Picture (tube, rainbow, N blue to C red):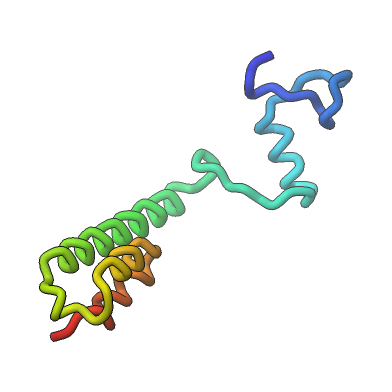
Length: 103
């Protein structure tokens, strides 16, 4: 059995169907939380995700470099705590730049 083929309706006596077709029909019926795969997204949605991911990575990298180079006396709170906080999506790096640095 190939990995993308599954029994229809989950029983072994049913003919095999493509897994993606079964998942799509379940989403349409409302039986399962909608999961949008990369190939199902429009070009605009893909672009938005890539831009957001790039901004997130750039913010985090900039914050980590700043934290590593900044003397301990110029950081509010423990540096290891800020290093972990920076990993939290957009909130961490923005919080570090807004509240973690002494001027």
